[in-house]
Image 1 (cartoon, rainbow, N blue to C red):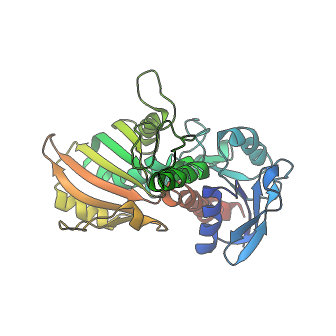
Image 2 (cartoon, helix red, strand yellow):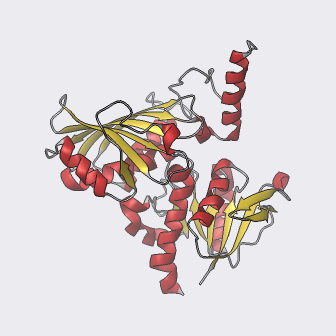
Image 3 (cartoon, rainbow, N blue to C red):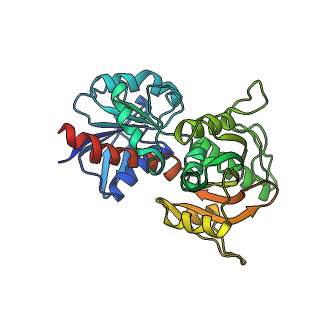
Length: 340
């Protein structure tokens, strides 16, 4: 049995990746419909060896659509996702709009797939923030083994997380510096080329940015509300691939060697951890890959039962599009089959 699938925001970075991954994973589709704003009507979108013609979201009728993958931002999700859900489509939304809604499950399939059953309350499932998604994939098996008390994380987030315009800005600024032109800053608050910016999203009253707040509250909702988290989120001059330095305080002792073996056996994780030059993964090497990579596994002796990890993933894939498609796979394997 195949399903009718709609991809909303099909011309953006994440929407294009959703189409790629649906094709790569041979998702059982009778029809895939690419949707975007009116400005994109008639544009082409690749879906495997097929070319889809983009249709307008504004007047699209979601009746008969089984699953709608949304990758068009919070404003579109706020107005269009409930309409799609009311028409009978199960919405998997990549924006932040529904993430903290108590009636909307927030899902990373390797961590809390069982919670997808909650989709029936609103016919909507939320995809977490890209930096949260890869981190909780790495945290889950360690939490199961030794119970995590506290996480301190510093992120190194690529510009693709801020969209096409951000990627273009990094390219333009880099080129301008090489040819001694003026550096123009529009998308970021400061120059991003050959620089790092410790500021993602808006500042909040306590001094954290909203990106940092998301990592805290989303980790609690997905994994365990008792885990304490503090994050510092930094934008770096990398096109694709988020990296994280994760420091973990556990309730029980867990050696680096034991943690390494636990992570090797965990779903969605690839351990590359040789204590030698090049024995680790960088964001450049994770682009186009499904796995969340874990390297630099070592004991943190500054706290009782401490571990430190280096976690890297393709943010457009596991951080967004892949996670959404994996949620859709859980739905068809566990819920929609029963309904059929």
